[in-house]
Image (cartoon, rainbow, N blue to C red):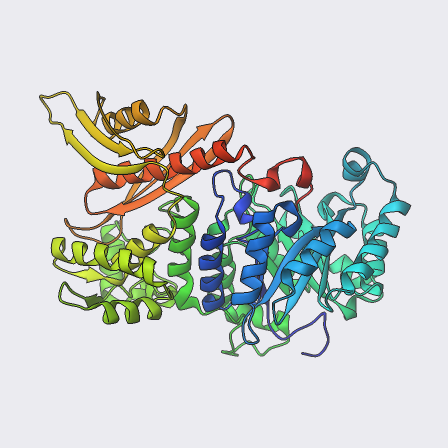
Length: 540
């Protein structure tokens, strides 16, 4: 690279595990975060923002484990978020310490409305804190990122002054967040250009951007920022995140991949250059999208760009005819380029444990003996029910096994009776946390409704079902069905996920998964997600 502010490619900073996890109901446990982090490393992201270490012991543990197990010498930079306070920065520094390449990302608000009503500090105080805290972060790692929170509504002259001070104190990346998703592309581009023109030492740092999708403009804003000098993009898988979410990684990467000739000149490259603009392995995009969707319980809408179920589907007869003759008539990219058509048959009912383990490793899962044994038993059962078992079936099965909440209530039996001339009735038997086996029955508007009413009679935990979605893993009448549900209890949302060839069984297991998460929270007496309590309301 010619200098820090103009690297020869776009750096991808993934904040799925930090900002993405702040989506209501998307909370992940430590093992689930580690699973996603490993897949992000395979995807090829440059930086993983693994969490907010000071927020809770659980978040600290997750960042530390990811730093230790994913932050290898040839792996991504592992980043921890910290407010501009010594306790936050110290927690982040200790959490990222095991990583070969660690980063602290510290921030403070610079908009007048945030300084007056949230921080209750004036400009001079914010400027002094910036200098002191960036310098303090520098004592833990050479890689320090600084963000002026709510940059989009900050006075440009003051923000430029703060950025200059942060870089002088040691920040090697300055991130410009559109915290409330307010800006339009032209405004965002102008803001980035203004920073390049008015911050004297900007050549000593990389300009990064972070933005929310409240007006549906996040990806467009980022692409305009690239044209004006931004060289790091902070994004999430499937665009998940607070409120309307973040800029979607897959959309940014594929926009620059497909329209490479358009963006090449902005990076000082010849128009015809074939060199990738990012280090992302695009063939891992679809698998990463599904993993994040499954583990967070956040369903990907069918018409979602790049990774939605309809992204490469053609209903119109004219479109179908054109695609059959030549894909380029209606497709600007191949499904294979994002890893969509890798669902080849790989194993059957006669396959052994070693072959199963080897295939899992190829798919990115290195399970311990106990998890492997459970997954293998389910694989053999699946292979008996299906004529063909695909990679996607195996991934759904393994994801289902590895993302379960602590099993306080265990499903022993579920039976349903339904039809167009009968009253849907369900009987369930559950093993309670005390080891009792309790059976109850209920009727409902359909078999799943009846099951959920019967489960509620046994579990007896007040909750409101707010989302229920089903999708098939592959095509065919014998396809596995994946069920994702979300329940609400006292303004907290809990997600559950399960996969099974029997959709009623999958629905029951998904519901119990969510209720077990709820029960865990009630037992602990703590808020499920520490990033949404008073401790850490000032996230980007």
